[in-house]
Image (cartoon, rainbow, N blue to C red; front, side, top):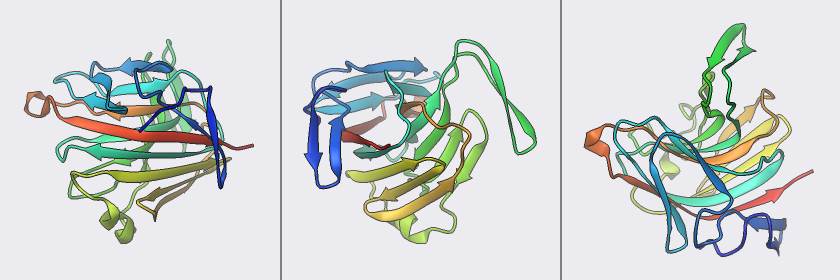
Length: 217
């Protein structure tokens, strides 16, 4: 469970200094953006509950991160899409970005940036990297059968995300998943996504626990 204070207490493990991103009691250190999904802390876990007819919702860290190793565990309802935003941004004014010869328009207040997918569907692209609100899929798991098979439905799964310069790599339950080289956004906040749903899937939940980060030079 998450038991330490954001940005305060750190622990030293075999790999270096780790900071817990959840204090285990409340959402101090986090800011909600986007839709109106409901977030709470329960038994030391962050819980996201889907609300009908609202856009994608994001529970965002109050501060940005650049180079890091992020580890966490998640459990998701089989009818709910989710994800972990990293190096993400949100601005009060509309913006445009150019990539691959195309112009991408980003509305005011739209969370955008790299998302490590949580995908319990038959496609099974959990651990793939999607560019939320901008370019779409950057590194899916079409050719990563072992990673697709690593996902376990209706139980806890472990994600490891490493962002070092232009390199972003992911592991799902210890199995290598995405391996992306991209330099569009060198830093930004981390966020926990609850995907928008209709009335049929309202009330579905995703849970995160043991969120910890190790910042790198």
